[in-house]
Image: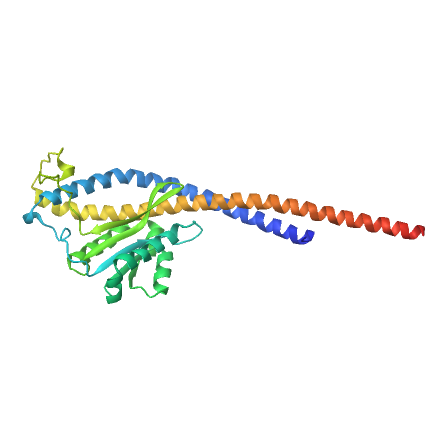
Length: 298
């Protein structure tokens, strides 16, 4: 059984750790409230904008074809991988990294072998992992989380659009954690470019999502599509990063809450161990005193 001093040191250490994890939980909860409000406000707008864009893309015809809707043979692939800059958030980062590696092995093994698979990482954890393992990481944007605003994300979105339009890549996908609630994050592999038009209704040739819509265009459909697609793509990337940020705070809050509860249970066990050690020490001292008294009598 450990001695009293050793148990006291362990109790002090666990209490200190418990204070840290509890403070981190509170900080994550504060950040989560702001991030959750932001993503929940953005989602309806982003979803409606994406729906309109897909509907227009499906009905524009050849005359309204955009460079962002042209599907090509997927020879050159770009994966945008979004993690966090810091750890202590459970399996948040490892799940994204694992999904990315599995995606490469299952779908893009040939492109990786040919050297036509590239990665852009957002978040230090992804950057460190893939750079150390010699993946073709063309860019890292870890600083985006320091000031996460639409204006700061826009240059990266425009760079992705330009690279696709200039045929540097044939397919761009985003891999990230989508925020559901504080305890649940859903891993998403989301197509970014090319834009997939809305599916047509069987036997009608009309997009399924537009059968109950009758849009009035001013000045014309092609001009609106030309302006709408870049705007929607900027919003889509910003939403993905904001989703990931909210998910990170939820995962960290959950992980730190669990760590705090575990520390509490460990303290109970250590306190019992300390009481037993103290009881044994007192019993031993009493036995020594009694033995000494008996020796003096003799």
